[in-house]
Structures are given as structure tokens and as C-alpha cells.
Image (tube, rainbow over the protein chains, first blue to last red):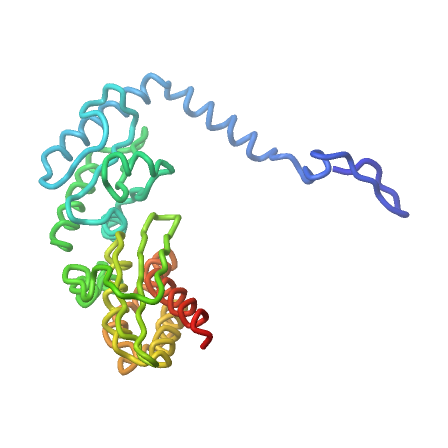
Length: 154
Length: 147
């Protein structure tokens, strides 16, 4: 941010404003407003309910897959719309890569929480995240994909 | 799917790694970590005159990083120092070649299986992890000897 601009030379505001140049994020502010309107229209309780249903369904499906260990609560109580898990004998980066090839997007790694991974004695985890647009068919695709991962590295 | 990334040779090295485990004696050791994913490797190098007597290693990580350490051992242990650095340079060039480099099997042996990995920018670092650790350890050992 400037203080005064002249053809002969300019002076600058004192720090920290000196380093905060440029147009403020106008488009982002309008986008945020639209997102809030969209979510309000659907209703946050409805979104929460959908997330709980999808997460419960995913927990049920993943629980039945041999070799999968679910990290954290075994039910939707005290759990948001994400599930971290490990696949016996397969590194999460390999799980993620093979799922990706099948069009299933998951995040893998420490999730900015390495001490938790150390606590559980695991190198990292695979993490599936759900939201209002996630369907049970997509959960099924992920479970099928995990079976393929196990066959591939087995 | 995945065939271009996970060649059978890579899976074989991952499931049955060659020369895995840290051994004594050694002239230098280097521990490298890929902070974005947590893969890690410790590499030890021991010299016998102008030859590399042994390259031993231990670590944890994805199949790419661990298989590449196995290939490193296979290619470099027992070779001359000059050949080892030439192999390292060829492997690095292959991995940084964005899939455009045609690998020379005479130089890289099983290392040519990693040609497909070069097309996955996020995984190049996995393949190079043990090689960077080797280069670091070897360079430091040579510097200490004043060579």
C-alpha cells in the first residue's frame, strides 16, 4: 500500500500495510456469499443428516473388507464426514495411486498429523471425505477399488 | 490401469527387496525424508579402494521409494565409484525427463522400469529418495578421505 504517489516519486505506508498491495479479494467475497446462500438454501441440518447417512454406510462397507483398519470411532458418533483407514501390507500412497487410476479420489499421507500416525504405529493413512453430493454408489466404487488394490499388491 | 507406473519389475523389488537392512562396516550414512509424504530412507555406503563395497539401506514408504532403493543396491554395490556416479546421473536424468528420456538398459538394468514413474511428477521424488541419500553419503565419505 502506498502513502502518496507522485510523478517524482512515491512514499509507502508503514508496515505491515506496506506489504499488502493489490486489489482486495472482491470476487472471492462474492463467491463466498453465493456459497453461503447455496448451503443455506439446502439447509445445514439436511447436509449434516446426509453426511451422517453416507458416513455410516461407508463405515459399514469398509468394516466388512478384510485387511482394512478404520482409524478413530467405529460409528458416526464423534465423527465428521471423513474416514481414515489403512490397508494391510499396502502403503497409503500406493492405495491412493491405484484408486486414482480408477477415478476414486482420496487423500493419503499424514494429514498434517504425523504424531497421530506415530501413535498408531502406521506410516500414514488413506482418507475418504464425504459431502452433500457423495452417493452410496461412489462408496461402492471405492470399496471395489480397494479390493483391486489388494489384488494388485497382494 | 497403473501399468505404466507399477511395472512388474517394481512390484518384484518391492515384495522381495535386494540387499535391504543396514550393515557394518560403513564409511558414511545418510538419512533422507520426503516431508510431503513421510517416506524415509537411511543409506550406508562402504568403500573398498576405488570400488563401492556395499550399499545397505532401511526405510519405509511407498512401493516406488522402496523398490528404487532395492534397484540402487543392485546397480551400485560392487561397482566402481565412477560407474556408480554415472549410474546415479543416468537414473536422475531418467526420472527428471518427464517421460521423454529413453533409458539405457546396459546402464540402468532394472532401473529402466521406473521410466513410467517419470510421467507422474508427484512420484518422481519417491523414486529418487534413496539415490539422493546415496549420492549424499558417498560424496561426504569421499570428501572426508580428501579424494
